[in-house]
Length: 313
Ligand SMILES: NC(=O)c1ccc[n+]([C@@H]2O[C@H](COP(=O)([O-])OP(=O)(O)OC[C@H]3O[C@@H](n4cnc5c(N)ncnc54)[C@H](O)[C@@H]3O)[C@@H](O)[C@H]2O)c1
Image (cartoon, rainbow, N blue to C red; front, side):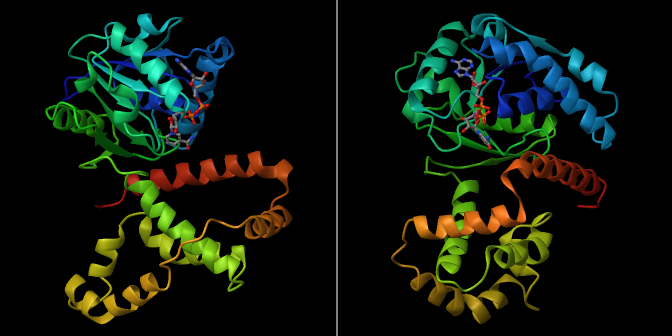
């Protein structure tokens, strides 16, 4: 390992905490995993074993067993975090739950440890303000599932020690993740703001009856999304005009400005449109097949990740 964070604790072993445990153990760290729920703790190692077996089958990891062997299940939060260099908080997305868990972590952690919160939208300043070691906390927001999708948004609170970002960035790279830095607290960070822009437009088009949900989905899965697996919007437009991004902007910026002006009064997603989309989706995918389709999605994702890993950058 080329970074200094060797001992890692994961607090919360749900969907995201389990994925994080695999990320750190796969990256060579000694991982101590804790969840407040006894039922979750009881099945945590078995669940991790089967996730790793799927990854091994997809060619994403060599041997699953040594990775699993680096993960220790703990029965108290203190036991998990006391010796950790890095702590990944992954408890429920409710401010009072985050506050309580972070207060417990604050009391039990080493003064020089770093704490990243998996928070999807609550900024670190909302649940770390009163902590003695608050300068050691920030948001490290993953994409679900973190062991398959590498992006991590690092979002400091106003009081986060600035020296943490380069250390955590290097560690995340070392663990095989793709960190980005958000230079201030903004609701939704970067990822969910981009996703929100697309979702809000999709709902508006659907509400206006301009296309079916299936056809709007197809526009992404058979169109825009193909490039998005390996490049973002700026690089996309840089390559979509002969003279690059400035040339593209000269040609098409007025169109995008008119589109933005046409959405100056955003509306909530309407109950009527949601009911219509729900009916359309359930006709295509009955509710009792949601889990099977999720499993299919995860297998497709693993195959895509394996493919992308072997491609030139
Ligand atoms: N699910 C996603 O798509 C996704 C994506 C990115 C980030 N996140 C974020 O990750 C965090 C966890 O979400 P999740 O989807 O894994 O939820 P989850 O419900 O699957 O897991 C949360 C776990 O936290 C445990 N917990 C609650 N309080 C605790 C405490 N004080 N100490 C230890 N464990 C405690 C619960 O028992 C539960 O097992 C949230 O902040 C969420 O917003 C979720």
